Image (cartoon, rainbow, N blue to C red):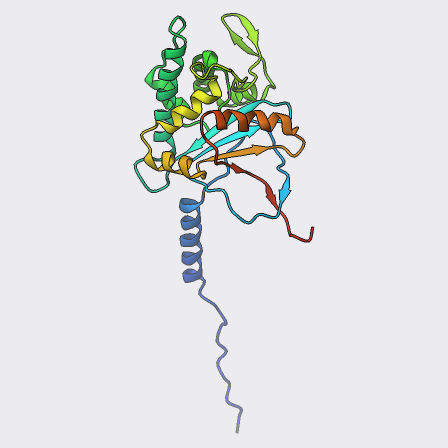
Length: 245
């Protein structure tokens, strides 16, 4: 009797379902991920053993370079009407009013387009009298505006080359004449975003991020400015390390 031949079946795995799941997961992560925004300068923070994390929303960040240049960034809420772009636009309008009140002879009048450009900026750090031409440059060439902010490119204003040296922060003994750094802090505190204001009062709305090589005297100037504004609670950003290190 002849052998019964068993029909061979093709071994095949249907990957259609797996492909669908992969695409869904990829789409989910793309829509929910928060991309790291570029900062004007590279800062390597000093290590610490503290495990308290700095919030990633409703936050006014102060970035201090080793040379003492000060930059700022502001973020709003993630799931509310006070998203980052809205908060930045409101902050700039409040700062413009503060600056023009202190400099009535040389006011800065920004257009809606320039305010919109600022609302999309990850960080800023120019003397306010140069804010308008810098925003005009950013609207045309964001990459060049970033290089100007970083000090890599000279900045031309009315045919003159100037170097942007961050936000002016020199202490003023007259409390009725705040410097521009203090004006930005006041503008943030007076913003329409109550969540940001409450966070600043509780000490979670302001963070200082300085390079590990930045002299303490430079950071101390920033802290003195905050304390002058009665902002006695703030966060120092550091890089976490194990306690035994």
